[in-house]
Length: 502
Image (tube, rainbow, N blue to C red; front, top):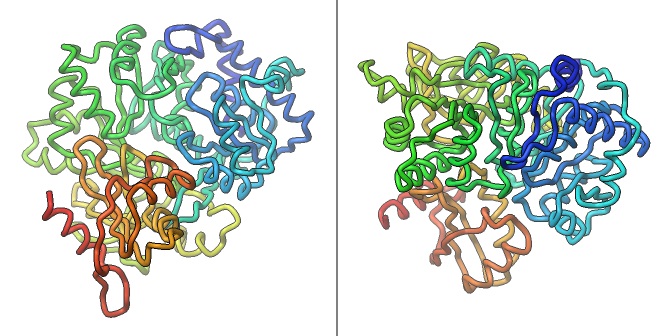
């Protein structure tokens, strides 16, 4: 089944129900939403986009994002959402690697793609082509797609720094949505989904179950995350759900306290994408009340590995409540979760090992990357690369990440990617990038550099090649990198040095 059928059904059942908002302004009801997506699909077909073709979305959060996304699905194509915070050269690689036929862009990002030298047709939502697409003859309904057909191609970097395309199928999205209702939260037509985090990631994935329920979709007028704006919109709409990185919650808590607000109108905040410190979530619950749910997932198993429901997040009566609050919850209904050795052998409860996941929401593989697929999918199990402990009650606690990934403000930074850019400077002989704890962002990027290079020169080099959030916030000159007998850099020693300097 094409996942977009859910939009078609809602438009038929309750056409006049409010659907898309920019700030407080309604820009479409469900009839309009459906009609515009169908017209975009009809236009794509005129452009010779076939079922199974890939179409990119490089846009900031806005109502047209959802129209473009569902238009792509109505046409039977697969969406390739690209984080709007990425550098044009990074977007260029993703779009070209995916074989995207064209890309929908928002003002400002078209220039980023063109400036990177991408030989790709950009359809700017402020331009004449997009206006033409909105007036095109609509398709009668979503093109049929089989459950195993590609719906969403999500690019996630690996330790090599080269992004890999996770193939997300219609079955995976359907299963993820069902798991949401079973394990995370309920949604009704009276609710609103508020998109304060990038729609290219978890926030956009959660649009699906809100379309199924006939909820409204609200994009902040600012196009991003502004604490006061979020609090105002929640109070205005009254039953708001939002997806947030942990750093967003800590910032919202601080701002709400400053303004004397209690989060009126916030119904559910799902947090994921980075470490949430126990003291921070305790403070948030004490201030806002029982509004929070935690999920743990990966692009390879989107939003659906474990969940810590609001009861567990707010509970202070259980003798082990603090341990449970430090966990990421229990396995969601649609997956099996185990702890294993690197070879995939299961370990007993309480053992430290690699987190393994199996179920219908696990990816079939990486796009055109059989080698990475073979090492990540072992005998039907997803080897997540994350390390943790599963207790006897089924609660999973993450202990560390085997891939050295840095999570800053909810966005992933892979050290090798930054290191490769810094090594382009002729004065840099060696470099190692690690994360340093940060009160607001969770972690910040720090580079240990062997060589002679001015900080400003390294900043300029990074700004020309990678997104600003990936740029190191500090460069530490070091005579030699600590290494083991095999020549591997000991990042644990570098992190220890940073901890000693705090």
